[in-house]
Picture 1 (tube, one colour):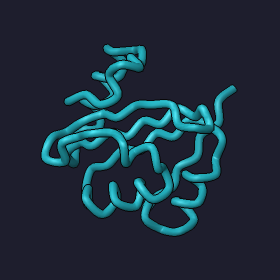
Picture 2 (cartoon, one colour):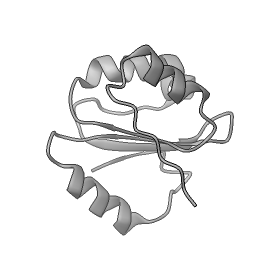
Picture 3 (cartoon, one colour):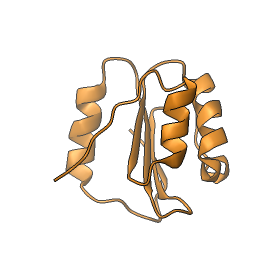
Picture 4 (tube, one colour):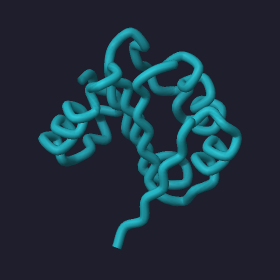
Length: 103
């Protein structure tokens, strides 16, 4: 049995606190307001500060944080969610040597 929780908008204090404190996998899709959201995420997911990415490109970041939670952050253009999930389904597995990859 899986458990799922949606926290939107992500920039409200309750959503950021849940993201920081929840023990499970964290999957964040960014489709607007990229810079502000990424800055806020770096405050609650400190490992993100050490991962290089190009903010001008669409990407997926995936890593295990210090608490051994899987963190997945996808930056996409608005309306491209279906394509994101097709790509994730095609890849199936996380490559620990490829922490950030372009979509």
